Image 1 (cartoon, rainbow, N blue to C red):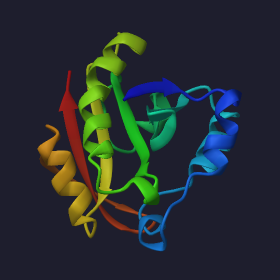
Image 2 (cartoon, rainbow, N blue to C red):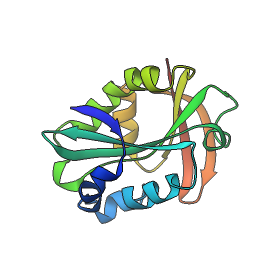
Image 3 (cartoon, rainbow, N blue to C red):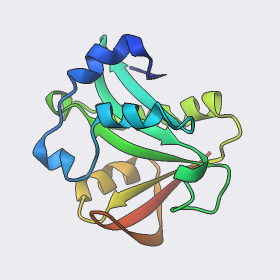
Length: 155
């Protein structure tokens, strides 16, 4: 598996990406995320590719994206994280999270922390993030879809 920033050559893969109703309770669609990134240079859509298939998707959001969750100006926000419904259960989400710190160190060398906001009701995602080294330091905020737990991974 490898991580790569979205480019137009991946448009068909993105259009074929599938999320379940349950997933859509907690995350946005990759197509919408890419659309938002087209007008915001601080949003970086990232694809996790395995055997030429798009299996996991997320956005890394700098600057203004981080502000609601952290005062660290050297942090980057992991958002819109999902695994294609047809590829769930194969460990791709975990693998992409393990690859992420080195990817961030290479692509964004000034960044010293990856943060994320996970819905308090999304227990499976919280468990995954903890297994991958993200720390819950007790910060909570209200989001559009309920209470959010802010988690950090220090680089």
